[in-house]
Figure (cartoon, rainbow, N blue to C red):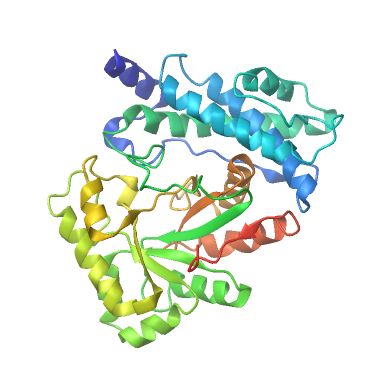
Amino acid sequence: MRGLLAAALIAILGASPALAVGPTEMARADRSLWPEPIGSEAGFDLASRAEILSFALALEGSAPPDVERAWRDAMAETLAENFRRASAACRPAEWLCDPRLTADALARKAALVDDVPSGLTAWRENARAFHRVYAAELLRLAVLFPHPTSEVKTLSDREKTGLELPDRRFLLTFDDGPSRPGGSTDSLLELLRRSGHSGVFYMLGERVEARLGRESAGALRARFEGQCVASHGWTHRSHQGLRTWQASVTDTDRLLRETFGPRHRSLFRPPYGQRKPDSGPFFAEQGLQVALWNIDSQDWSASLDADEVEGRVLSLMLLWRRGVILFHDVHDKARLALPKLWEATRGSGIVWLDACVS
C-alpha cells in the first residue's frame, strides 16, 4: 500500500525517484508583499506566525491524510511549538496571538489566514502558492525516504538538521566548493570577512585538490581565516549508489585536516543529503557527525535569481525560526542575497552563529 501511495503522490507532484534530488517546481516568496517590517522582535514574530499557519494549511491539504501521517504529525508538533515561540510576547488581542496553541488545534487556527486583514490579501495569495509548492517539495522527499535518503528525516540522533538549535539562531553553510582562484568562493569569503559573519564550507575533495594545484596550502588556509571547513565527499555523487563512498569520506576528511588544520570540523554533509541507511556505525567510528540542513535556498537552480533566493530563505527562516541554511559557494547568489537577509533581520533578535564555535 505504501508503495502505491508513494507512486501516486510522485505522479501528482511531477517527480520520479530518479529525479528526487531537486524539485521540478521551486517555491518562490515575494517578501515585498508583507507590509509590516520584520526588523524588530515583535515584527519578526508576527510574520512568523502568519508563515507558520499558511504552511500548516498547505501541508494539511497537500496529500491524502494517510500519506506519511507520522511525518506530518511530527511536522505539526514542530509547527505548533514554533507558533508558541512566536506568540510568547504578543498581546492576547493581537492578530494570530495564541501562546498555548497545540498541534491538534493547528489546522483550525491555520484557517484564519484565509480571512486576513485587507492589507495582507496580496501576501496571502503569494504565501498560498509558496507553501503549496514547498509542502510538495518536503512531502515528496518524505514519501521516497529512504530510497533515496534526504534531509527531511534523520536516521539517528547523531544526524543534525538545524532544528536542534535554540530559537532565532541560524547557521550559514556553503556546499560544493572551493571554486577556482578569484571565483565565487573567494568573493563570498571577502563578503563574510568584511561583514564579520562566518559559515561552514562543505568542500569536495577533488576541488580542494585542484585548488592546491594553483596555490599553496598556506595561502588557501589564509583565505578561510575566520571560517570553518568540513567534508562533502570527494566528488558530488550520491553515496547511496557509490561503491567507494567510505574512501570518499575518509580521503576528503584527511585532505581537509592536512590543509586547513584547526579550521577543519569533524562533520560530513552527504551530497544531495543522500547517505546509506546503515552508514551510522561507520560515521561513529570515524568520529564524524552527519550534518544536514532544514533551510534549503535552492540557489543552485537557474530558475531562481538572487532576489528570489533571498525571499525564499527569509520566508523559511520565519517558518522554522532556527536552523542551518544551505547555500552553495560555487554560485554567486549567496553573496548577493546575504546582505539583504542581514539587513532585513537587523533588530529582529536573530543571531547568526559563529560557525567555528557552534
